[in-house]
Image (cartoon, rainbow, N blue to C red; front, side, top):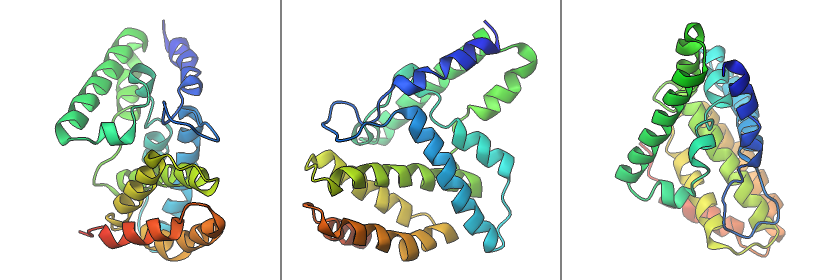
Length: 213
């Protein structure tokens, strides 16, 4: 009982492997993913601030560091499955949020429950911080898929992961997205030029098919 249970549960995130059921040269845990998302988000937010955008840093750290806590209860569901339909995505989110809420009610002292509900909520929304979380989450998806493609992993799921994440990022109107597309992505593509998989072609096709708002 108590916050000890929450602290103890964090170890479970180290045991949940992302993109289960597919051959991978390197496996990534949900815990490692969450840490990387925080690092991406810090830099993305710095880029936004350099353009005069106000950042709520406390909110950003809260939502990025805890954005996948609910996977303790439902595991990591493959992206193509999770986003198969809006109805399925909504149902999975409802289950995840319900189990997180039950965990808070059962284990977190009453005086801290409002804080935990705020910190463990779904953080992706229309705020700048929520959009940065979305970009950071998709960036890690790109880099995980890129690492596999670069080594010659021809599993179609990694091409889908890379492509869908890039399309989603391009659709988000932030200064940091422009910076990524113009300054960072070309370096990534150049690094992957010797890959057995044509990463440049996949990238160009994804960017061409992305519909900007």
